[in-house]
Amino acid sequence: MTHPQTNNPLHGLTLETILTQLVEYYGWEKLGQDIKIKCFNQDPSIKSSLKFLRTTPWARKQVEELYLRHKLKVDKPG
Image (spheres, one colour):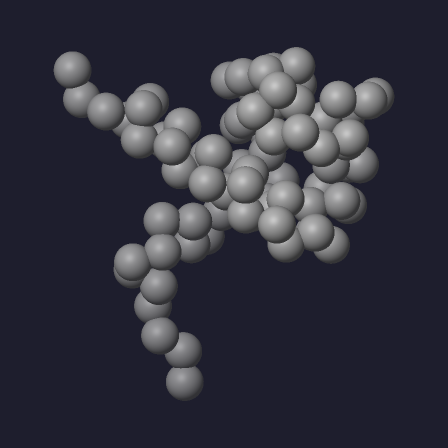
């Protein structure tokens, strides 16, 4: 039995989508400043970053939290 995740703002988004949108908006340099992980600062790529983030829960959490803050800022009316 599955329950809809109506209270989960990340439901339906892949990690790749989240990361791609952040890179498009902030760029690798700014991401590396905000979230200090090697895959953002040394020869960054979506592929290497996804590999790291999928196996490192604390880093993934930071990326997801940044995405949520980003969406609040971008989607804010006015």
